[in-house]
Length: 312
Image 1 (cartoon, rainbow, N blue to C red):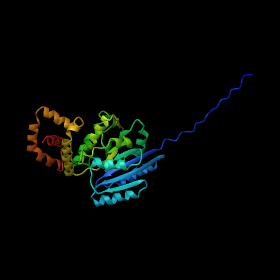
Image 2 (cartoon, helix red, strand yellow; image 1 turned 180 degrees about the vertical axis):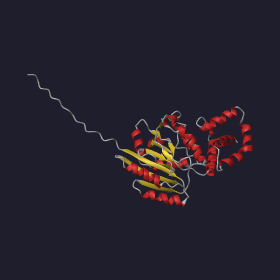
Image 3 (spheres, rainbow, N blue to C red; image 1 turned 90 degrees about the vertical axis):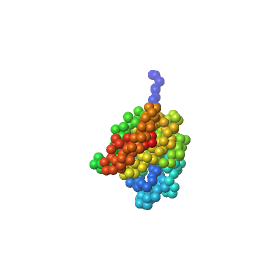
Image 4 (cartoon, rainbow, N blue to C red; image 1 turned 180 degrees about the horizontal axis):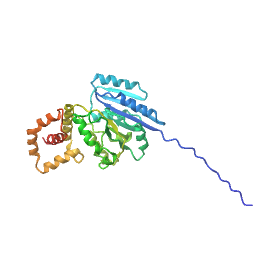
């Protein structure tokens, strides 16, 4: 008889997924965000093997109503609410939050955004791999046209929405990045913090996109939007626009190649059209601005205004 042969079957029990650790970071200024935090906490609490925290930091907020609402955040499980008395700006407050965070991944969310997907957090976790250290989810508009009628910010954001798919954003991944909804590994962010010279509104995220590009870190664009439903008055939006244009001029040498508006004004300057545009702004600037802060603002005039204001 031949020798008996024995077969040994080794059973490997299913491996439990690696525990994911996430710090959700929300900078805010005079903006109530309790409902946003509650929605995020509900999703996080329902995900197995997720260690998480939510940290909200007031960047020198002065509105007592929003402060009172947000103080309830500190009573929620795994949540912290930090009141900082001095406004340090959009870059510095995010750097502060990153230093306060304790977990491996950071998810930055603007306080005026809203959760529109039931699997928002789960999708980020599922799409995060060791080689994908930075993901941007995009945004969508949650107001209807009737609700946004007459609001310049609404019209502007709606006009940009067609380019918000991950496919289209990926064509220029570093220019189409915003800090309103992105996930990044903590060590990556701490090694490449936002530039704290950006004290005023605008373009700190654009320069960070350039920083990440020069560091050779890929940005992965995914379709995992938050809702954008906070649209300030036309007057306030124009004030922010002027502030952003001033920031763009101040940092023009560093932002060149990463701003379409700056690229256009450079081209017009080479064509020696800047003096004419300055004259045109002096002639029409006030009238255009009256339209833009009025009840029926023109999106076309808004684009013209930014161009003329940029070279004035």
